[in-house]
Image (cartoon, rainbow, N blue to C red; front, side, top):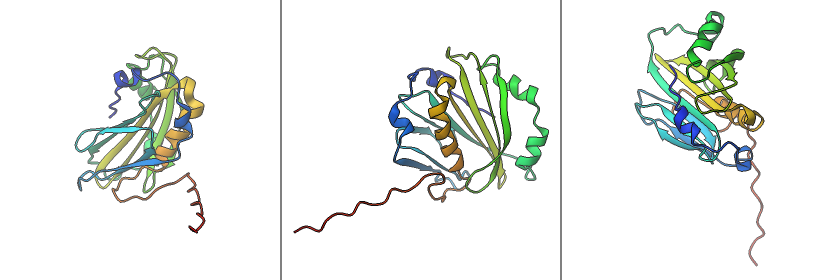
Length: 198
């Protein structure tokens, strides 16, 4: 259930822009389709493409960071992140990523909150990739109202210190409904008081 556009990621710069890590504004992309509701909140420097019935991709034009959201119908409405974690086959996960990330090794796994649901989460990395640099993926998935949501974020492993907090922000602020608010894990800057005109 992953749709990662590694070729698009390969065209990105190998150095994260300092503005990416210090982003102060966010973009909000909401599905307008009642049959595919979601809200994705991400730093202002990132750009969204796709959506509707197609996967939604957000990436940064000057950094090796990309997230792909896929929504698919599911029949297992009793799915839970906890049960999925218990049934996770490490070898199967590694094999599924090895085509684009040879030598893939599973890292941490567990559950994590979206705004309105609990998701299975795991990360992993590889010493090489189809784009010629070590990559890390953070995979999350959940089921809500008969729909499966998969959010995969991929970034250059060397840039993890700057990229992972952004990925964590995107995951924490994702919602399986289109009316979610903003923002978990961020502080709103106080408005500056302006002196009255004299």
